[in-house]
Picture (tube, rainbow, N blue to C red):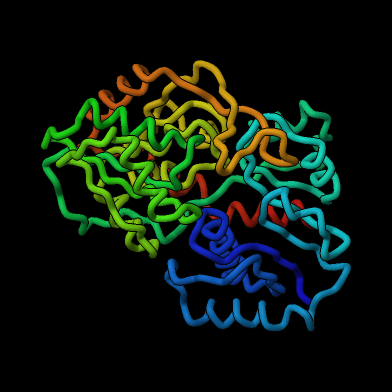
Length: 360
């Protein structure tokens, strides 16, 4: 019988990134696991040792032989789909981006032995809607060891901005690009590197969104990158840029790109709200205060009246964002030493400690 059952996605998107690092840490501790992958397995983005590969394959291939109703289950997934319990005790870890839990979400949370969430903001939202505090626990994400400061990174005289993440309304992708282009467009002293492809949209839809954000114009200093398939490639980009803009998202369960860039000593413009407040502060980030909220619905990923993902996201003043970029430019070629402290303050070792202590 295994010590732990895990149900989680093994792929290159954000949930998969967190899952892979939890698995790596469990392997490092030589904890016996039965692994039930959610969806197709794709580990091509990661650096994987032969020992870990063998451990993971064994954990997957022997799961039906070792499954037991008394073994606790750790499930990393959305509320949607987490109503089915494999064993008597299930611990859900989910990333929540809204502010108005539905009755369906509340019921699914209450089915779990405990639900982990990444931020105090999430815990406070659900407590306001009647969830008992002992049904939840805060679980910070760690810094993926695939992302590290690379001293071999080429130098650039231009100030390099980066925007990384899925193209979504809640992430303000179009707004960020449009604002940057109007301020810095075609000025060779500045570059914007875009890694914003959304795999859930068609290439034609992605291209149309970009054209709309740029208002049909072309810019010599905007570098549109193809989808990068490995963490090694993304790490090279994070090391090259000076300023990260993905922290201007209005709603995040965590926000990996801004978190990772800041941990590598880059300067990030960050909306001072939701999960950002767990790791971003006035010492390691350039904070932009929110000025209100707006409905999250975009007609693509968030639909009003559905059983999941209802409510609002934060807004901010465009002029405050522009001032934050101005401040970032002044710091761009200096190392964010306080940001580097994220590497020791947020680790997957601590994360797994929290998981195991709550499941014991």
